[in-house]
Length: 84
Image (cartoon, rainbow, N blue to C red):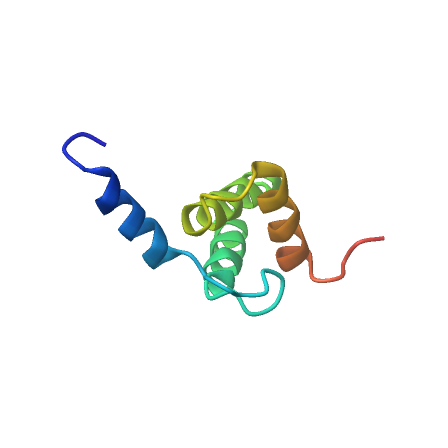
């Protein structure tokens, strides 16, 4: 971003992540991810669009994680054992 120095970006990233959290159980961003997914579904969006939005929310909080890992975590959270 224009006008921002690296220390400012690092400080912001530190504020929004869940340091030391077990990513599958006690992450502070989990409610936001689940709300994003369910909210999109309630508005009539497709499941794939809702999942994409939930992944964006998760990646906002965890920019350090690879996209594939973020997708996996979000799917586990939003489907809560609904896998066949």
